[in-house]
Length: 250
Image (cartoon, rainbow, N blue to C red; front, side):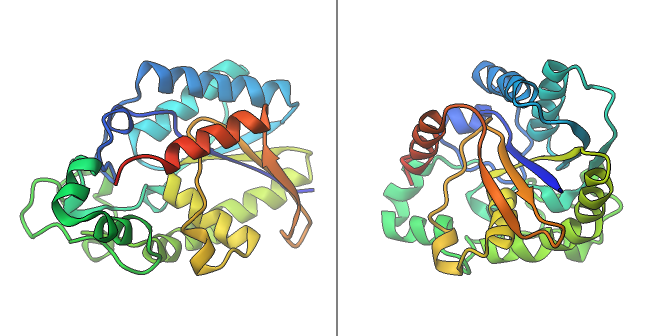
């Protein structure tokens, strides 16, 4: 039976400051590090036999994965990384305070940029220092594939090819051994995967909140339809954490 674990990185410094982060590479807070380690303990206590790991190219996801694996005693696991698992690119909103942005442009406009399925925020202009063109981690990615801004629909389009080509083969291979696949990524790339797996509509997916640092476990049939799913640990705690994400200003 294929088993998939989705884990959003622990709280980042910009999460704590209520800033739009996107592809900006920021560190975890002390709370975020603790969340990552606790995620590993939840996986170990839940008897999840993680055999292989997939992460984005952003440090907050990579460090979360490392801390979780350390807590599980599995730092030796094989790892695959892809830009396709990166957070949604927030364009010219990146680095801006969510509350201040809402005050400047209006709550409704910022809500559209943040939460509508198909409307991206303003794009980064050419030459902006926040663009990813010169970042060595993306040197093997076609420049035309590097976004200047994305809506959630764009994230779905660039995430699902990686899911199909890299994660699905691992799910089938590890299922034969009784093992699980762990994906450590971001709120919107994980939202894209959950939309696909759960068949969530374009309208409803915008309301799905994903808390930091709490593993979400899928038990799948051989055709990858969902047999069961849910957060590990205290379900009420996961609900409270998701509600806290929803209440972030902007």
